[in-house]
Structure formats: structure tokens, C-alpha cells
Image 1 (cartoon, each protein chain N blue to C red):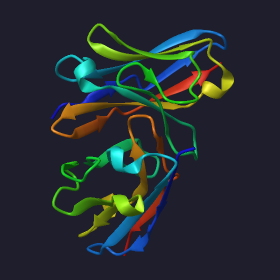
Image 2 (image 1 turned 120 degrees about the vertical axis):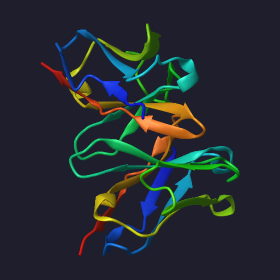
Image 3 (image 1 turned 45 degrees about the vertical axis):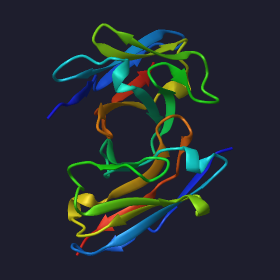
Image 4 (image 1 turned 120 degrees about the horizontal axis):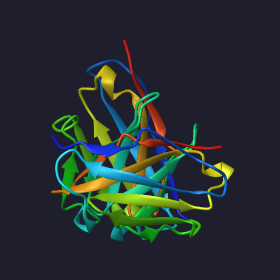
Length: 110
Length: 114
């Protein structure tokens, strides 16, 4: 069974730029997987930041951007702020209506 | 403003059943595919099920296939998840969501315990 991989943790300085990635245990992520990125702070429901690789959800600041980098999907945060400290999950459409979440990345801003 | 409001969670014994509901407003519900996603205590997100906008296609994670049924009633802007043969490992917060940016609900807690 294919596993969706993410960095378990990452840290960024305030004002800095960070790129989180989303890969596959076997194969490459492409736009055909319609990668989405969700943000979740402790005790809160998730919210979708990016869907269809690079489309921002309504109300999401443009410092969040999505792309394909090499063989992975990527979420880049430019000018990180303290309230960006959250868990970030990617989710991929594996085809046949099946979606799989990655294990999530805990982002620390310090 | 999109609102998705789940209800129906609670405590149930192993082998029991529950039906979750998700009332949608602020979006064209009948035009949107919808998902159920769950999160066990202290764990990450797990995709559970998907239903196409018209209900013609339904898909499930292997962990719930044959036990859970997703459905929708577009006339009532409501999504459902019928959960049968519940197991301890089904304990989680269950969210309804549109993964294409329309939004997530606040979640409803299902606890399976004897």
C-alpha cells in the first residue's frame, strides 16, 4: 500500500520562508493527484489552505503557495508568522475516489 | 460563508451503530462532492469516505469498507455517515469536509467503548 510521506517536523524563523513537501513511498506526486494542503492548530478543526496543487482557498493569505517540486507536492510559506505554527497535512487523490492523508508536519516558528 | 455542522456523535459499545449528519449552508451543496475525515485522539487525519455531488459514486477507506455507508440528501443539504459494527479503533473526531476548499465542519466525537 502506497504511503504519503511528509516531514514529521520543521522549524522556521519569523519572517523566513519554509517549504514543506508531500511525497509517495513509491512513485512521484504530480498534478494528477490533485494535492491539497490543510492546516490544523491544536484543538481546532482543520482548514484547507491549498487544493488542486496550487489553488488557494478563499481567505488564505498569498504567502501560502502550492506547487510540484521534483517528484513531490510542496507547500511554501513566505514570510512566516507566529500564528503559522500548526500541523500541516497534505492529502492526495489516489484515483478511484480514494484519498490518502500524509502523517502531517508540525511546523514551529521560532 | 460556508458552514458545515456535524451531529450525531456519542458513546457506543463495540458492535454498535451510529449515524452522523452534516448540515451544510452557504455553498451549493448539490454541486459539491463531500468527504468524511476522522482523527483519533492524538493522531493525524484519516480519510474515511467520499460521495460525488449527485450521490452516484461512493468510495471508502479499507478500514471502514463494508461497515460504513456515506449518503446525502441534496434537498436537505445534508450529508450522512451510517456507521455499523463499530470498533474501539473507530474512536475519533469525525469531520465532514469539502477537500476542494469549500470548508470543514467543527467535528463530532465518536467514542466506542464498553
